[in-house]
Image (cartoon, rainbow, N blue to C red; front, side):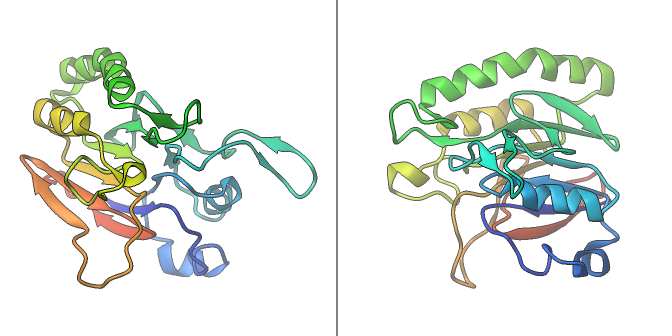
Length: 211
């Protein structure tokens, strides 16, 4: 299975008819946040595959050219705070960033993110009973603390993601949020049994079932 993961920036080649030639063989598209809703909707229209997503810290109500108010990308599947099975893959999503503005949408304190994880646990336990594993891929916007994150509060990762990976052992954690501008920047790291990947702005992942 081939997965196209996107985050944070519109890629011109993907937001064009070329996307069919370049990525027509992908089986799943994953949005890791801070993407215009029209971008994910465009991909969902041109590629006949499921498009799943979480929100980033900049995602909010958006307006279309014809004046419609859009609260989420239409025709796509939200992973926010829940687990779903798509094409045999068990996915779960925890979008948003560390809280750096009071009351801002899609921003969370460490305690708030821990609470979101706690609410997700019943679904993960059910996955374990049904499929023999908790999940395959955790989709986030922010990275885990100390892995691909920044020193400033805005880009600091969540410590609770480290605990999540140790207990629930997803094969992958896919995130965005931290923009990468250097060719030698670390974008893929192994934490216990989980491969953590910064997908900014796009990344192809070959899923063979073995992580």
